Image 1 (tube, one colour):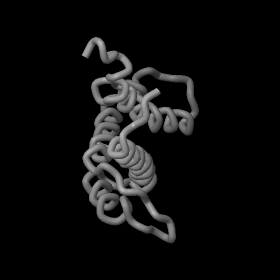
Image 2 (spheres, rainbow, N blue to C red):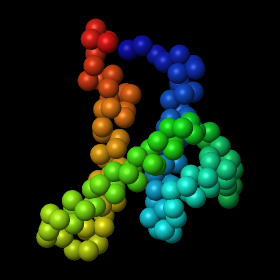
Image 3 (cartoon, helix red, strand yellow):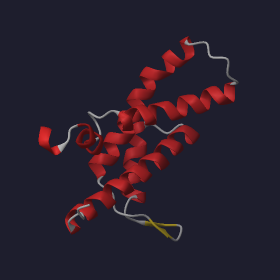
Image 4 (cartoon, rainbow, N blue to C red):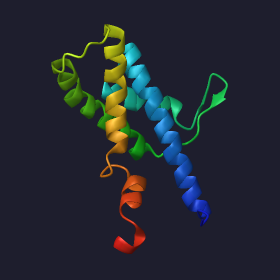
Length: 127
């Protein structure tokens, strides 16, 4: 297996940090009812690449962070009515968990949005 060039590894680390920051931002949005623009601004100015409460947060690829958070919010707006219409036999708590999980999975798993997934489904000889 080929090793990533140092610049590729740095980019991968920034994308990984963006994913982690996106999960934290989405959790905070859900918990505190924070809006999309507010959460993006807060994380980009106060969390990403900074020390917070003694913890150092890694620098992240800001555009990728914004794409993930905005994409999950967009997907959630589409999926919530479909989940509600399905009349699933779930408790309110389980229904909320399902609504929280599905948009993130649908956004990340869409090969059109994930370069790594697109590469896997489109081997080098077909590119």
